[in-house]
Image (cartoon, rainbow, N blue to C red; front, side):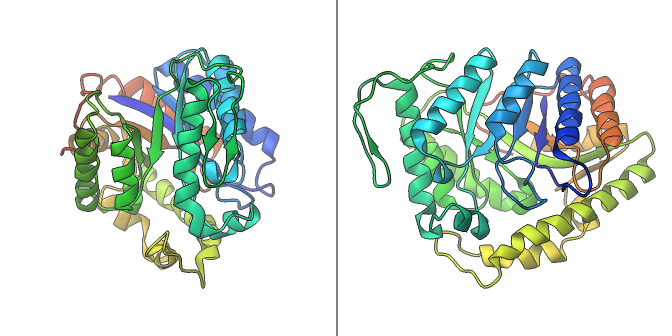
Length: 363
C-alpha cells in the first residue's frame, strides 16, 4: 500500500502566520519522507481560510523537494483556468527538475464561484478552459515548434520549452474528478490518471463513475496500468476514544471554514456544475459521526486505523491513499504524532497490500 500526505490548509493568519505554518508542514513532509510515505500533495485555493494558505502548490512543493529525497510531489491540483498554459507548463517542468523527476502533475477545474470571479473567468467556461489547458501543457512538454490554436489561447510556433521536464515525454498527468461523468470519461479517453475524494461521493456512485473511466480508457486503446489517488481526513492516537473525540472536534472546525468558502455558491447555479448549489446544505448537515460510520473519514487507534485503511484498499484496489492530517484545529504536534504512528506502526502492517492494478476502483 502507498500512503501519502495531502495538504489543504484550514488556518488563517489569526491562528498561525504563514511562515510558521509552512515551516511546520515542511517538518511533516520531511518526517513522512523518512518514514517511507509515498507522496506529498498540495491543492490550489485562494483567500479563504479554507485553502487560502495554498495559492501556489508548485512553490510549496518546490520547498518540499528540498527537504525530501523519496516522496513523489503531487499537484493536487493546479487549475488551468487560472493560468496561461506556457507559464503552467514551465512552472511544472521546473518543479520536475528541482525534484529530480518526482512530479505527478494533477489538474483540476476548480469549483468555487468566488475564485472564478477573482480571476474574471466565467463559470460557463470551466470545462473548456480545463481541457484546453491540460492539452496545451502536455504539448508544450512534448512537442517543439508547434502552433497551438485553442479557443482561449493561441501561441507559437515557439522554441522548445525550457527547462524540459526530467520525465519524458512529461510527468504523469492526473485529473481531479468528483461527481461529473464527463470528467471521468474525458480522463479515461486521454489516458490520464485519477484523483478522487470519497468524502463527496458515496462508493456506489464512484464505482459507476470508475467503470465509465475504465470503459473510456479501454475504448481509446490505453493499455498501461492507470493510477488513482483517494483522499481522506485521518486522525490516529494511542487511545481510540481520544482519537475519535479529537478528530470530531477538528473536523467541526474544518467544516466551519469549509462552509464559509462554499457560501460563494449561495444564489449561484451553473450548467457546468449541476447540483453544486446543494453542496452547502450537504456540508452543513453532515456530521463527523455520520461520515465516520460511512467510512468517509478515518479515525481511531493504530489497530482501527490500520483496519480502515485496509478496507479502502479493498474498495479501491491499487489506490494510493492521501491522508489529510492537519485539518481544522489539528495542531502541528498532533499531526506529527499521526505521521509517526502511521510510519512506525501502521505502514509496516500494510506493507503487503497491493499497490498497483490495471483496474482501479474495481471493488
